[in-house]
Length: 139
Image (cartoon, rainbow, N blue to C red):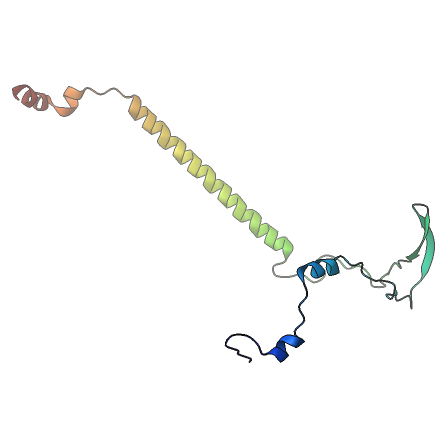
């Protein structure tokens, strides 16, 4: 570690290269040179094609054929694969749907009961009794 209390010694400052901001911006706008980069063409087949009026060299895509026979989907069955996971998800989804519908029905019934009780007319004198109003007249 180098630790200077105020400024580095003159020999250190002389070695440090300072690039002005303007020069840094110009350096970023330089075109990249690709003339030394070459494509590895060994072991590949190419053909000339016309694309948009220009002759272009394109690589031939080889179709890889497998010699193995196709096996049935359940050739190596699993305890729980994608299909089993899907079944489990669907059962959970159905159970949640039933629970939501039951909650909706419960809320609907509670709302109807509340509306019914709110619409009901009540005789205050019968509910509170004649003694309640008798004391109010004396005061």
